[in-house]
Image 1 (cartoon, protein in one colour):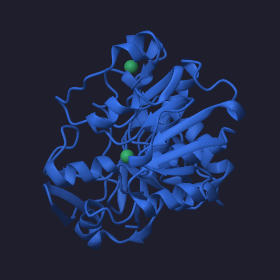
Image 2 (cartoon, protein in one colour):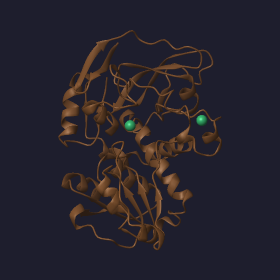
Image 3 (cartoon, protein in one colour):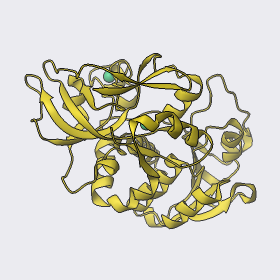
Image 4 (tube, helix red, strand yellow):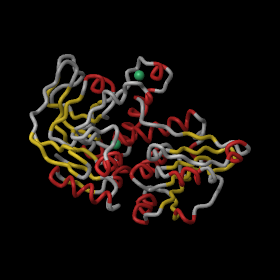
Length: 335
Ligand SMILES: [Zn+2]
Ligand SMILES: [Zn+2]
């Protein structure tokens, strides 16, 4: 089979590998769609601690089951959508409703979606792979993983009681990349109507306006009566500024992870006397995956603007050059 291997930053090569064979509980799928991700771009640019090099690449996928191991919960021919990790559901974090922090969630993750076939380990096949409705497009279905990250953010906001009455909640999203735009779409799916999207890229802001957000250039952003501010840039200066923007008693969710070792300086008066709640969720648990799947199935058209175009495996390096140059949000590779 043809598969993309990330040899070194900037060097994706097409390799010819044997088609994997499933063991007990595992499944193999023919990948029909695999979407690019901000994490992939980071790995392609400078390497990533969670993505070994040289190694298989790509983690957002949908496809058709072509082989199953003993006891696997699918049949050959099933159309499926899934994510690339699953919690153990036995460790202290899993038992504490923090599956996203499971001690082995990363150890068992699967990479290699930019290939004709993908082997999915038993734990993931059992917990975090689902039948895809036939009418749902494979490319929309492959958004399940990034949307599960967004759903985890939504879950943390609900736990913090920051999203109580959707129709009355006023939300600011900063950063109109794929994740910021998926937040706008997901908030709309949850019934939130008062959404402001701030950023610098006019084209991306226009997509946000199409999704129903009021848009504002980042330079013109001022504090307001926002109940919730969702930061999706991963830049320390934007993390700091976010704290200035919500109402008293409001919530800031730093969603974009900054480069490791980054530090920020915070206005303690805002945090204490104005009682700002700070959240910064990472990854996702099983509830979030189910929520994301519901959003995609309920209103697939809402998520279409997130996907820029379809490309082939051969175009891989050009895709990431485009993403690095700020051209396009998310490409779908059809291996
Ligand atoms: Zn991703
Ligand atoms: Zn666990």
